[in-house]
Amino acid sequence: MKSIPYGRQNIDQKDIDAVINTLGADFLTQGPKVKEFEDKFADYIGSKYAVAVSNATAGLHISVLALGLKKGERVITTPITFAATANCVRYTGGEVWFADIDPNTFLLDIESVKQLIDSKPKGFFKGIIPVDFAGLPVNLEDFRELAEQHDLWVIEDACHAPGGYFIDSEENKQMCGNGNYADIGVFSFHPVKHIACGEGGMVTTNSLEVYNKLNLLRSHGITKDNMSENHGGWFYEMQELGFNYRLTDIQSAIGITQLVKNKVGVVERNRIADVYKNAFKGKIKYQDLPEGAFNAHHLFVIEVDDRKGLYDYLRACKVYAQIHYIPIHTLPYYKKIGYEDVDLTNAEHYYSKCISLPMYPTLTSKEQDFVIDKVLSYIS
Ligand SMILES: Cc1ncc(COP(=O)(O)O)c(C=O)c1O
Image 1 (spheres, rainbow, N blue to C red):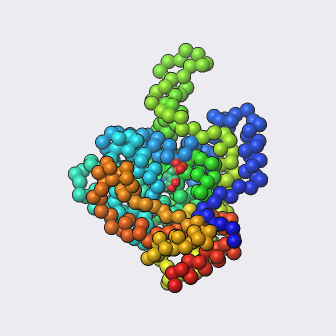
Image 2: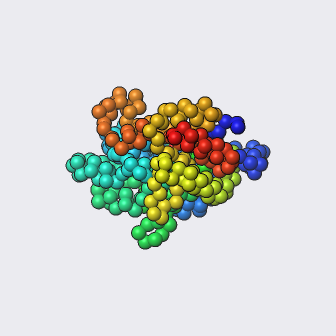
Image 3: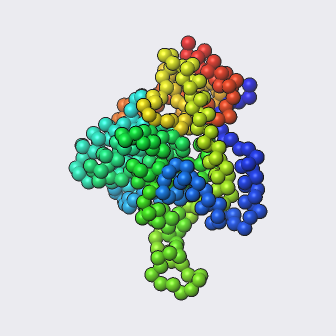
């Protein structure tokens, strides 16, 4: 058996042709493929606007800026996510406050968020960044209601969840990142994710004002629109201090072909998840699926007592399972800036047991059976 990673891109001839065709076209960057990718992505998830960016970290950065986050302002997020979810707040000089996770869904626990908000004076927090962890959609209707009560914005970190959805109280299907309940959604196109552009990301919103700000911030704050003066065709204005967070046409071209594949990819991921669940039911704990939710399954996470033992054993069998995630407040940078004594019981308990098994559409049944066999034989 060759080695089995926890996640893997699925590149076929269509992706390769798309890239090669773009290499021979007029624009390698700032051309038509970027807009085409943005339009197709927005259409897929049902948001009004989409802004392609160089990666999701950049996307999160311009998202907090577009919503006006300033130095010293405070944002709540989950400790069980990739560091970038919290780091975007730090880039602006903001403070990250962690609430605990739900022990069964592994998502940011809204009750813990409420407790945190209620323990502080009104206006203490500016926003919340829930994460559709592992691909499981957060119930954003609930987070929106809470946000309205406390005058907060919501950024949905949907990096794990293109194609995921939950059903709201009106029985409507709400695709992750569609902007109906969150102000902004952010996606990643790193190769372990559903859509692989090498590097890349997408920021989605339903607000024209936010969309315009995101566009400015992505490209140095430079624009030819709404200028206070105009000296001729060459003229532009730099209206904000922005960045170069652009996605190239080459990356957008592969993004478009990858997006098409994601429609079957998420179904395949769910089939693979069902095989794991059938094998582990009653023996091993895995992520709960709340009623009506469709997990996009970037990951398939289980909890086991001897996590390190299983991790080492699987590696010895050339199964490269992974740990998602080391709680952010325990990372040395965060400890150094004052999170040493933060106590998040559920997150820390989860971290002591979690391990992500191989999950990607091209995982074969033979490979998956091998993984299941090794996991079950280790724990028994
Ligand atoms: C939840 C989450 N947020 C943000 C990011 C950052 O994405 P990128 O690597 O595209 O910057 C990742 C990537 O691993 C992630 O998993």
